[in-house]
Image (cartoon, rainbow, N blue to C red; front, side):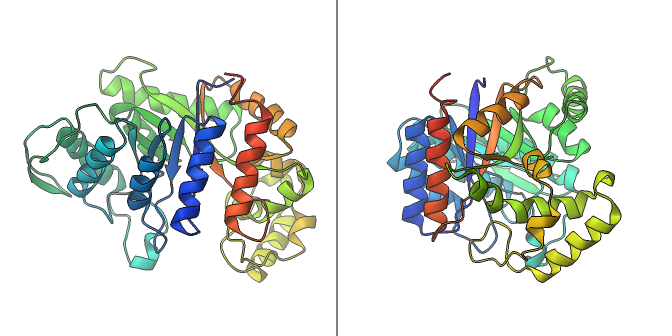
Length: 341
């Protein structure tokens, strides 16, 4: 179905639990594992180092870090270290970033910032001596221990401009639209192709993967209920005309009565959300349900022409996030998609 299947874990738990989940993703057969870079949460690069020491095959990276809170030279040194200690299994997931408002960080000049960052990181990882003063960053020097093997760079975005930039500079492009239709897939590919052409790269040189949310349980209804709040959040942002303004306003009100982050197990989800979010919209914004349910849903994604997929793991509502994520990973492993490749 897919040549490459990637998982992402948000580290809202003890470091040891993150490592244990990483080992589980490797065991069931995921190819790549991204660790979310979230403000105020456990540091994703320290966790990647721990995971590198505890795994043997799976590729490890950030999903995604940003050049606003981490200077490109710092990122290059981090990734070079990870590439060494993982024996060549590192990748760098980078984007404009999210959730930086709590640090009073503004996303100034995002395309220029990301372009300069990726260019500097690429040069440094190649072992080059850099001496550049850009419009955003300055960098003069050379990595003490550049990696022997190249490190793939993955760019995640919903932006047309950043997707074109990924076509110019990235090895992997993550489509962050969450809900993927055939016209949307074609649109993202066209933006990517524009960037490839602009840089003189061969068409199709960048791996492209839709970034989807995954929640799996033998109790399919529980899995769906576990992501209702998440789906409601995106419906409130995108405001699809099909739902009607009255329903959308009711969703807005229910979200206002809810508390906590939509994937935090300590959150409160207003009960009305479960009546307001239609079941078919849950499966539009998440790959969710029983193991057999998710096989059918992912086949529809593969039928859009994707050979890779990036799955942001959502926890089934259990006493702990570790238990809920372990259930999702186990259920996906039993779906047979990973074993059947």
